[in-house]
Image (tube, rainbow, N blue to C red; front, side, top):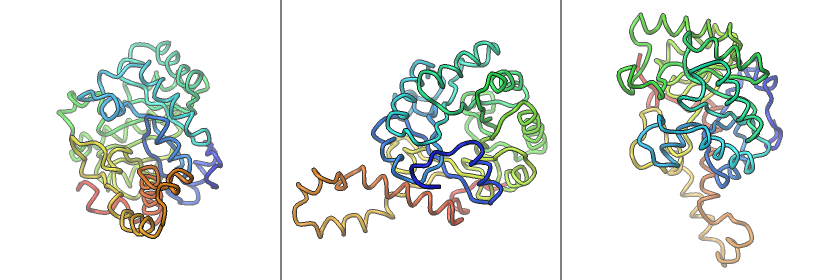
Length: 297
């Protein structure tokens, strides 16, 4: 894919057929979206994690649909050629099929999202089917589901016990039968995730679920080291690896004032772009995630 060639569901599936890992990032604002627009990132998730890293909430629970629409609209303006997924916040889809369709439509009509993501398996099958039947592509989210983390016993790896593993497999089957085109596995043991991906009809993405999947997602603020509160075990900061070359190149420029004014390659925008490029390259070459950034079974 060329940098400015927007992915489609058909082209995303082609990557699976060709065993080319897909790479996506979260994003919540215009400025970082313009950075991602210049990279080979395949997809952007406007995640409800924006409630924590951009809006300052302690978790994702308080995030509203109106806030998500505002964040997604800003990202679309900054990245017109990227496949954008809107993350349905807690309370925007659980109560009824009608509510789920209405809010999914808002993502598409008001902010220009190409698809939506929602959490849950068997319990959300009717919601998934209703939204997909309305013509909106859906990505499922299983494993550690932050919106219901308290019911899972906190933020932890999901799938180590036989009961949890069996439930994951059942949820995968039900979501696929309900029409999802992809499923995100979060904090799932790599061997279980690999088995799921090798047998699934849909695209299987991971965030903290090991390397042998159809693609990898990271939180932008984790991979750039921007969120001060914590960084999960599976999240790698890619900034240190690009700083040496960046500073060496700047040291050879005679007039940084003019360079920065004319080219905008003297600061965080350029550092972020290089870090994202490295993330893409490491995923596609199989270097990330390695055992240092994966959970054990």
